[in-house]
Image (cartoon, rainbow, N blue to C red):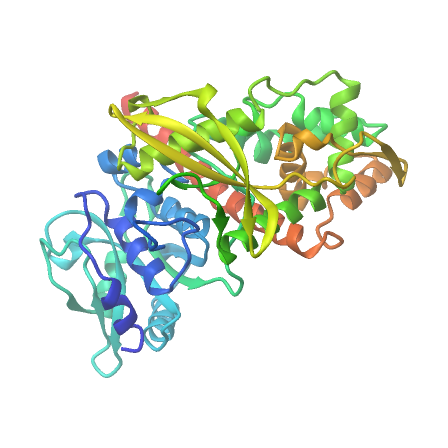
Length: 476
């Protein structure tokens, strides 16, 4: 019962009938003290269901529930480490060992996805955390998040396994269990993958299925040709799939004059990651390819536009609204000011925007790193490294742009993407360019984070494709 006390201190009832997956994650993430990276209410950093929307729009979850792979994707996206197992790819003995591990630990928690009907309960698919294990009786304690239906209850492990080892009719795949733990390093990321835009499925399918085939079927003489093949035919803008993270909060008592230590550390981290990315061969290669092929960045990717969008999204979230159509933003009202951080003047910039949410006015502040005054990213000079131009970006572009998103996506693609390139020298060169082993530590963590997200996203992509095929067959 070691894990019980942490879980029961954060235990809550699901806010919607189909929110069992989201509420289960909220209970576990808060029990693990995972930092959501933003405030909940007042000064408190605390997860609630409205924050868990990076892998599936909340309106969809509210209407249809959420799948096993999307829950594991959400946990990873929220900053936890996840080990997920489908029951048909596991065993009762393995499941029992994970139940024992998690019941004996305060920092390892188990989430189960099961069929209620097998437990003689009302309903079908359900998620809940496991709160304890009785070894002598071989029974698990289910902390049922649908507390309006069932209180916490003990279930024979063999029966619970049977409920896990059932098929989810929505996906045609087995249910299962996942162990969720806190990352060893506090989470602070500059980039993330997003599944909010419905075009993510086409992006996922293209990058993970079609690109390896294209690379296998064509002959290349330069690495620029490889990049053109990968990114020249993207089914959507890269910004619909790869996002950069902006920290926003409601303005209180006028403009911010000082940011706290944690905010300063996060800003420094993001600034460092962006500078490291812009010193890579991958970004130089992307820049050279874009210039040679006259690939223009979208006109609306200015920092002011990005901050306006972030403030609008933040305002909707703070008001508890999932509908951005209820938010009216004023571009001319985006204002910028330097602030003090840790005693140093001007390390951070606050950009404020006035918005209307459901007719109510609100000012939202966005925290961004101060643009460097040195030549780290400015000047427009061109250097040579291993035969590839190292192009520095203009100082006024010190925020992630299309080329940054393309570069970090290039680094995060699976190594297997390049295996089928026919020319061995081109294969070796592109492999060196995208190798994570030589990346600086912070950028390496960032790329590995995106790679892990891509793994869970690809599973969701495959799962949804199978679901669509099954629906088509049923209609036929």
